Image (cartoon, rainbow, N blue to C red; front, side, top):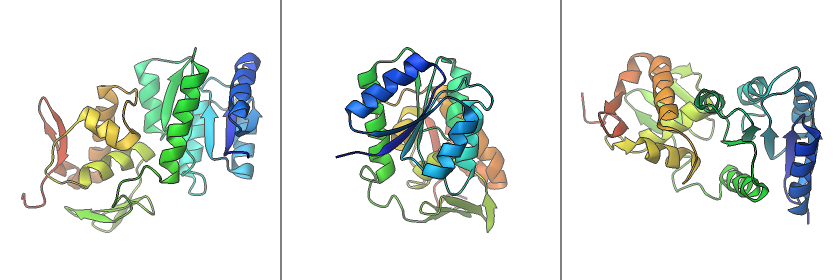
Length: 234
């Protein structure tokens, strides 16, 4: 029985064949393309369950593909796993800011790749969602609607990236509680997600800027992490 459909975007023929072989062995249906333009065409036409995305592509690169995917209401729900030789922290942060769900660097181990894909698909299907995950939250004039993935501040819609939304939602579920950076990563991505402290700091900076005055409710707890100010605090 065939499993979910995965779109693989990779311009290196040998790596593409390796990925396709391992995915098909696990009975996934695989769509493949080697340019950004073809990827966008396939993406909007076929709507895969997941996109496995190389960054260094001819024409439109992986960052731009991810940006377009996550900014379109019809495709933003599709998870993205970035697979690339670009392993610098700045590249990882850029990918996560755009809404990528995971990030692996080349060379990679096929078994680890399959495990990452399974984990992402479990989360995106909702089987790993905790109780209350889809309940609306209101705190300090910030209204968060997980089902619609919408955030408003005093009635005005705020445009957040996928990861910014997830960080804000994780903190807002427990106002006053202090979360370490790794607890935030676990809440957003799942345990053992390979990401740096710095990427969490980047998300918080982005949230404070976009939330305006309400961003002051996001407090830094020196030496520990972050929290949303308690609802009883002034």
